[in-house]
Image (cartoon, rainbow, N blue to C red; front, side, top):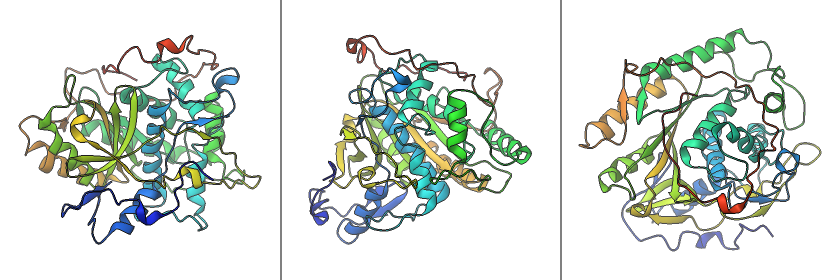
Length: 404
């Protein structure tokens, strides 16, 4: 019996308030009274990544479980997985417990398996975090995990995402368009997606990105276009010690946008993946369940029951949210991004006296020039492990301007 299963699915949402207000989940809204099963199916279809145990030690000699320190990394996996589902399967796709999943779904899941050769595994994320000043086994904040995802995506040719992490609470339209169009031009020059020349992490990522679950190498599955799909992450601090109530309406508006990927956040040293809200409560997926590692079958298939949350969606009063968060959005093409910009102007910027973040057309002249990221030179051996668990929860996440 899987740790996340319960027996009666019809009881999942019984404790949700009886309200006329709609429930918003990643750009979709539901009536609690008439669309409970559809809401339940939507939540259950999100990929759910939790603590795991008994995986191959990170770096060969490091931890074999991320229990107690990997919750924000798992939330980062969830927000990225949602972007990949939108990329390959679309927002209307639903997971069925006894259905044969699409091949793209299984390839997405393979990217997150707890193996050193999976693109976005806990192994890759923890070791890439060393470059962000985090020892393997140390707790991450939302800004740091965003930077790690940005670096790892550079090696991922199959999903071919452009990742933009905003700086100083400011999203620059000019920089994003340069990033997405430059990346697409680079793809036009690329031949079939073969293993990269990069060693170590890069080699594993390149191999993972081009292999189907069955293990055969393939060509880039996406035809060249003038725009590389965008994963947009906006790290914010919406207050000092507590969230400022003035930001709450704007935060809720983000969940209504069709480009929404949800929010990384939670409480100090306790990360959650927020996927929607009802009234004054946020709905989230909780990674704080330790499950045994799942290994793929010989044919590449994966028993995915434990990767979908089949228990009651958790809720939290929005005022209990830690002010350090990261908003996530996915724009499949330029029209989608332009639509997002319009929504932000109309629903977040024009209606608020205190803005949650800024959206500007041109690169600020006092900033350093925008340089699209390139594949980092990965030197880590995975041996930089934290010395003592006493260090795990010493400090909260600091937000700073990063040039990576």
